[in-house]
Each structure stands twice: as C-alpha cells, then as structure tokens.
Image 1 (cartoon, rainbow, N blue to C red):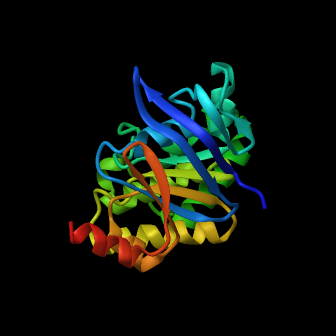
Image 2: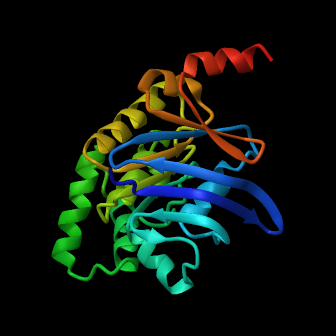
Length: 234
C-alpha cells in the first residue's frame, strides 16, 4: 500500500520547544484522515512540518514522495506543487478577482501557456461550483464561496495530498457540510486528505480515520462516539 503521508518516530520542534515527540503516522492514498486535539496540541505544527515551513530534525517523514528530513529550501517550492494547502483564514488576494487568484498561483508554480491556464482554472472552478463567479473579488463572496475558492486554488496542480487546517472553522454547519461533501468527493477520486479540526460533529457525520494529538504524542481513535463520551465525562 502506498502512503503519501508517512512519519516514523518524528519529533517536531518549533523555536526551541519540542512540540511533538516520536510521531508515527501513515495516511494511505485516497484516505480522509482527521487530526484532532486541543488548542496548542500541535496540529498546526504538524501540518507546517508536512508542507515544509518547519524543518524536521529528528525521525523520518515523507509526503508526496519528498523526504522531509534534510529537505533543502530550494526544494520546498517543488514539494508544495505536489500539495494542496487549505487555510481557515483563506489567505486570498483581496485586490484580485477569483480568476486572478488562481492565475497568481499558477504563475508562481511554473504555468506559462495562457490557454492551458484558462482551461485549468475553469476546470477547478467548475469542480467547486464557482465557474460563474470568476469576475468577483473575495469580498463579494460568502464565507463558503471563499473557502470553495481556496479549495479550487489547492486543486490547481492536481495534488497527491491536501492538507487542511480547520477549513470549516469559520463556517456555519450548513456551509461546513457543503465544504465537507466537496472534500470527501475529492478524496474519493484518490487524493489523500489530512484535515485538522475540532468539529466532532462533522467527523461523526462524514467519517474517516481519526488521529489525536495529546501530550506531545499521537494516537489513532477507533471509535469517535466512545472518544466524545470519554472527554465529556472528564
């Protein structure tokens, strides 16, 4: 079995603080996995390590075919072309319209042919249901539409892996469900998704593998209902 996300005995350090220790994680091709844990447990630090913002100094880790330990700065842009990254706060270019937001990413990742760029941009916009909103700037979009644009941006380069950091955190339950349905359909097509979240409702509703960060370690949760009951009883 292929594991686009693979960590073995990985220790993650941010600043001079050891955030996570001896992390083992394997997420298979097309798997939808949730990363849960309290605020400060290390969810964002783990994701940042996977997309190369934090260096991995101890242990072994690979993502989308790239070895993270010893990864050089010049290789980080090439790694990120293999990944889709979805942020809670969108991080869109507010002075450019929907289409220009996509073109910006495409130019930054090596696209040059304008015809190919237009075809690909409209293909991902159609996938997320924004093909008629191409002329709008982010401020003219709803929160759910902005997150759909972020997902379209993440899909531009046909990534093997999508890393999502609280993608439904700022959305109401109905819109959250729409975003989850979209992400699930992407996983069903073979893209591996690792999603940090604190929303147990969507985990219960949509299912998937669950990994909990707690006291600098990682463990798999086999039954979300039992887990929620256990933390409710504390």
